[in-house]
Image (cartoon, rainbow, N blue to C red):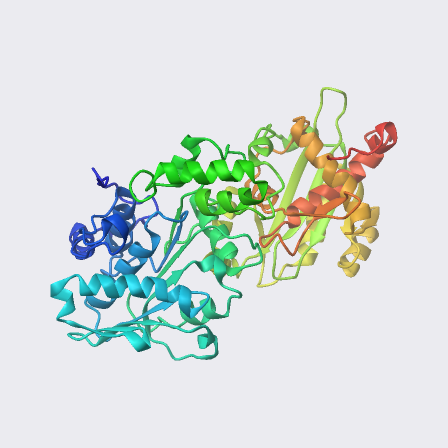
Length: 535
């Protein structure tokens, strides 16, 4: 017995000017439910959508822009195996080919290899064969792995792996099955970048289980989906669904299985999951496979370093007025001239009850802010309105403006030292020195970065820092991935951290100077008790 959607609620990712068109959604659901299941005990029975499947179909096909076209061009569905993934992908492929009122629609099935891509094709072919109304309107070219819908001249075609060398597609739909198995991003880029420009509402339907490679296109799209789900990014064209469990969830708990498997008890037998779990408990080598395939966990992934719930507990209010005249230390991270520049002041505690106070400043070129919001899907414009992000005139960062700003800060606060990345900023350093600041070069290797990075974590755990919840700094802290050397030293990894971490790096550099020099007494924390080593 299937579980039906009792009451439909529009997706929270519906744009302000979009509407839910019940007729369009009903059409998509009715088309799919005219099809039949093709495998196992369900073979031959009508394809009645399970509640979570129907939610996806209504969201994707029923959320329309004022123009009447679909709002979402990309749907990313990440879900464990045996939840009815291939059937849903095949049904969507047929809907785009035969039921979307698109003349000469080109719909492509992609996977890492032809065999994988054929799985969805075979399901779609059987669905056609089992539906008399479709069967008489569709021609199946099995040897070419092509299904042609004769009334509109539309087709669904499985692509071979060497397609990455080809261009010239006029894509209406792409079904990417098991995106995590893609060996590189070539095929994904060919199929999604520009191939659907001539169409009014192309749909890239990406469906996959979790993978284990964080340098993959799937991890990139997964991270974007996660960011949108968690409210860190917005992209009105992207529809994210991730069914899975958290890293710290107990993988042996049946409640956790239910959370990750929306079709548990329907297409996924609980006895099967239980048996796989028992087997993994007896054989640790199977644990990763169980977590990945049954619970949809990225098992070998680099983990975001900073636990954001603990960071958020340090959002103690910071009043810049009360800090006037206090000793502090600066960290300056100048990224490229078109990017964000970060300057962070850290104020050492005045006594045992006081905290390390963080006062960050960020700058971005004024002219490219709108472009960056559209390109990066990051809320730079909102942060600017809030006064959390400052702009400099023109389309590159105006260093002279920042120097003057820091000079002004120097008159407000007692800035003892400014640490900077020794590979950049030569001119600016000279200018700051000319203003009377003590400027200290700061290496970005393990030796220099590890002690203050570990200290930052320690102070966060102890709630001994205050950062007022500054949103730009929070975003950057959440972006940090860590690299570890064989000796257990750590440092922020700019390569793995795909998003900006400049503010976090500037904070770590400023914190180092504050820890080394302390406040008025100039006593180093490192000297007082040695380095804090994270296990």
